[in-house]
Image 1 (spheres, helix red, strand yellow):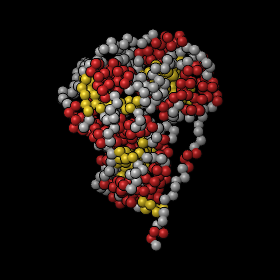
Image 2: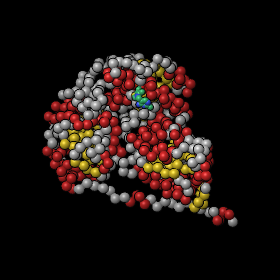
Image 3: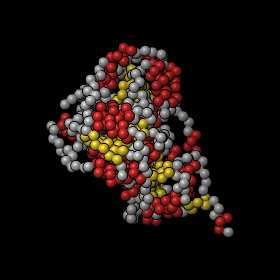
Image 4: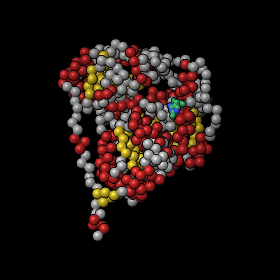
Length: 558
Ligand SMILES: Cc1ncc(C[n+]2csc(CCOP(=O)(O)OP(=O)(O)O)c2C)c(N)n1
Ligand SMILES: [Mg+2]
């Protein structure tokens, strides 16, 4: 009897879904197409189990899966078809790679027998994504599929996370084999911890330091060590700066929080780093946006560098004390070894460099963001696009926890925001999700309004409309003699009408009073809301460190 003989046989498509389920994946971001028809056919039978989100475009689908991962701590899983479906994922994968986000992207491929023949919708997506994935696979035999999917989920999440791509020829989805549960051998990897000697040396440096600064990055957030970080800095009373990726690892209103460091860092923060005699970098990578001129970064300081990824050590710095390994173990040891301390004078010295605040009634980015923040202060995730509005958000939003700031740091991907807001809301239905976007970025992704509307995701969209590609325009003003080449948006879009086409409520506001009113009126609506703030085109992001300059040479106007 056929049934008996084939009893345990399953198609490749079913094996993929089964392996995802075995790993507790219940949310998929996907877009169908010819090469993945068999996978969607199998999904048709399991749509009760999987929450499948279909966006308008594969790029924004990857941003959604990415934000889902950033805000839930789970691996984001996405599906695209071969050819253009696969190439549309590339910007999203690169964005996730730069910010160490765990993703598994499953792409359909032409059947094995058509590979390498310039077949319809064939691209070498594994070749193309080698430099922007942590690992990738072309699975040519159905027998390997379960193992590969299982391993991919593990590789994406383990150690320093990152995106993994699995390319599956159509005939592999269709072929059948006996399903065997993967053994998951990788799961027993030993955990690395630095030697007691190095830990002692680091603790001694901290205890002897007069002007230490912690520089906490995304690694603290990813490894979920906010509490331990706070324990460490509270015990030894260490002022703590953040990179974009590390925002929220210490609440912005904590007395030791210095906020952002680097090109658009706060004045007091950049000066603190420059004056410091010891930088303790925790899960941060000393990106050029943070350090400015490498050989003049923190010129008086020794550096302790804590990271799970040994390749980060001395990549952008020299002669640090390296503490490589699992952050939780390292921080626990340091909390034990550092002395209880009070550094009131050092804190006072730092905070004396703060700059004056603008008048609260002015309709300027700082006040707009702080007012919005007042309405959305608890359990709120903030996603941004890329540009001035992103930097202002980083400077002025008072983040309380990590995993609340979703932004494209490393790649700086305009168009990231709306897809990201969608993914964040899908992963966190009970939290408020606010998107801060710019008029330029929004034109790159506004097709995803469709997705917001279709799934009725009550995301709040706040656009800071300066009718310009503001960040680039600011650079042209400051560093290119005000030669505004192609950065002023002369086109006019009626965004309220655009919202109307999708059935979304939209508002335009031009004063703090109007903004307050609209925020109040829409606060409790369970539907997407769009608020456009018409701001002055000349509004600029300050401080700014001119490219290639040390971070204490920041400009406060110009
Ligand atoms: C995909 C992409 N293209 C181009 C850029 C270069 N770029 C960086 S910021 C920016 C302007 C963004 O304009 P907008 O979204 O209106 O934000 P604003 O700076 O005005 O707040 C541009 C063009 C980019 N980062 N990403
Ligand atoms: Mg703009």
